[in-house]
Picture 1 (cartoon, rainbow, N blue to C red):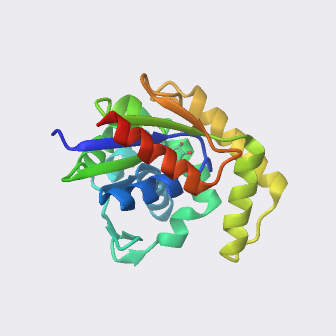
Picture 2 (picture 1 turned 90 degrees about the vertical axis):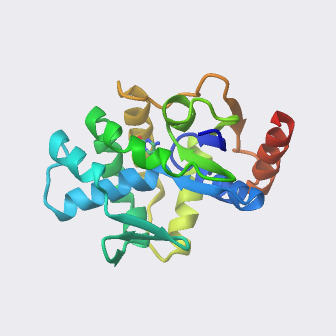
Length: 218
Ligand code: C5P
């Protein structure tokens, strides 16, 4: 499969989702939010009362995840879970099951299936390093912990969800630590990735920078 892929990896709340989504829209490419797959798996495990340490059972769920992405909505079986999957608690649960190698393996084919004509923008932690190592352009998006926490805070407040800055910074640091130190596909820049720090730039500037690099890579 030789369709173009742009990978955008980085830590929690670095702005990957916003940037990846806008770049995809601009180029008319498909978009893969790989974090949503880990979140959906965690949500499903919770609903089925499966312990987050039960690697084998969670891998079974992940391998046949009954999810669909329809016009920006995330569906699990027949439920619209768009808001449920974004909850902080589900993000934390997702990062716990994401350390399990069998679960990561179970999600590989689903992720690869998003690579369709004319191309794909994929965001996550291991898009450039593990899932699409042959990507045309690999970006590692970062931002300071403060910038990330305050963005996440704003997002939650805008959605009418109450949030506490101190808790957010704590969650974020814990999640970063878990994502970076795990043995399976730890969060780190893929070989050949360009690092883009978004602490001091707007989402629009980040999008334009990625588009410029993509044009240069052609
Ligand atoms: O990006 P998002 O916050 O939605 O991801 C939720 C969790 O899923 C992350 O904290 C990470 O542990 C895990 N994840 C992963 N690999 C990916 C995407 C997400 O391990 N490619």
